[in-house]
Length: 73
Image 1 (cartoon, rainbow, N blue to C red):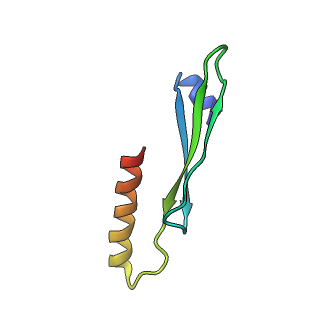
Image 2: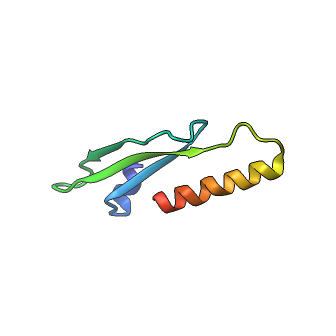
Image 3: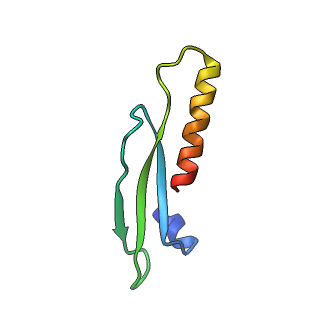
């Protein structure tokens, strides 16, 4: 991720990881990948539904998770 931030000259990078906890909060760190400038690296949990009745319900809930993470970025 740090290499990506450096090569793309980005100021923000996020690690997205699967989580069973719907309300898990992420972390944010400040790094110095450039000579005198900073960038931020954060983590973001992607909720994976666990207790569903069938595949249809899973698809519906996972789509909600996808939409939520897309708007949170």
